[in-house]
Length: 219
Image: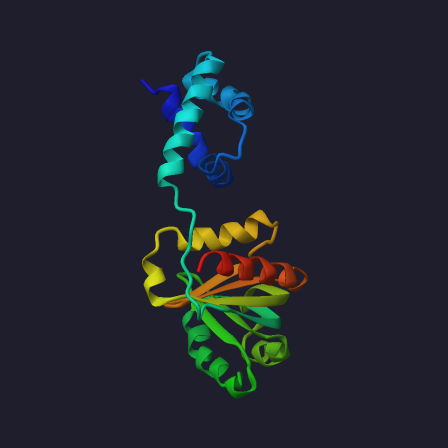
């Protein structure tokens, strides 16, 4: 038979921000108990005592405080790089489109600081580059092959120590910092020691400030 404690744990796992707040002891347990009791009763198919729910939350909070990942590690060389005036173009993936991709690589001039990232999924291909190259890319691919186009983007890249890739929850810690500050992440691109976040240009300065503070407080 499913217990109240088990259901509380399941509900909290479905809500990352609540889980984080519990681990840091910054949430009112009684208020949370009142909030989730109807859902607990729905899953239990019977009434649940407030005291039992509140106790389950308190115990879970204590356990999370001991085990929850809350810190990313950066070193003295960790920094943030920003590029603005970018565009993301998502293409439907097929053989003809893939054969054209090699021509896309010739468009960007890295010596002039151009950006070009091509990511292939199972069914689509994502191209992120400077807005000035939009027409050249449009000339390479038929309009029917374009699934999505997002303009007015900025990229914010964090370079991280090689050993940090072994840190459990590293991506969560960084994305959490942006989400807690109401900054929408359009896309994420990563390599071995770089994490790049695509955000709307209007969010660039706030995102930059948030990530710089995150690095400084976690060196």
